[in-house]
Image 1 (tube, rainbow, N blue to C red):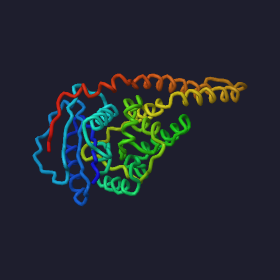
Image 2: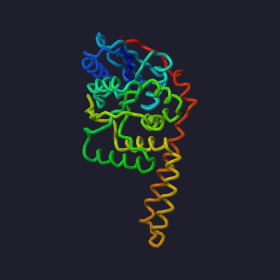
Image 3: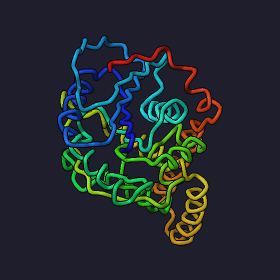
Image 4: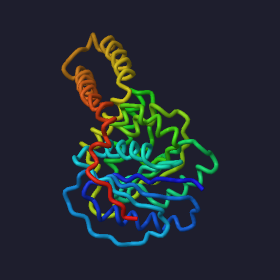
Length: 290
């Protein structure tokens, strides 16, 4: 029997998290493995409702209440460090707490661990629920990432991490800034399963266009050395191509590229191993719901 930890970061959206717990509990009724949930409360400023339920298919539920708000990626990083240092586990499944990562797909992760033991599994997005414009922007984000990093990243937080992969993530400073970027960097031997992006349980999606740009640049910043080399080659080739037709219009791609380089250089400063090492000191208290 494997011990599997489900890791859920949350900021204020408690209504969705408790609905997600209900869905996880009902979907895992026929699973023999020991399933526990760790919720990282990223210093929410909204009171949560008092939930008194049995959750008979979950072995335990804990909440790490953080002192300060650190953001989604750092909440996941803190949760991984806590689980690795304090818990006995075989796999960790990070997932969003709003319903966009579908709880019914947890079963597919668990089944895949039996077919490929000790390997990390990622949920590769095959279908999204957003509007066409957002889907187009997301497609452009994937192309941009591939061109400048050489990596095709088709997954988000919703993954199933082996213990060995968690250990590697905790030694990589990029984990403190971008989960999917860090996972791509440290783990080449991954298995993919199809995953459908669900709809939020309550309210509109929080992934706005600006958030998508920030998310994309955060991933790209993990591979900053590769990006700088490819950018330099692009600049040289592009200048040679336009030297006889130089104008303000033809200079726009160069300006945009320089803005991107500046942005990823700034985002790369978020990769702070000292802060990552001290992540558990920012836990205010640990609650046990079960």
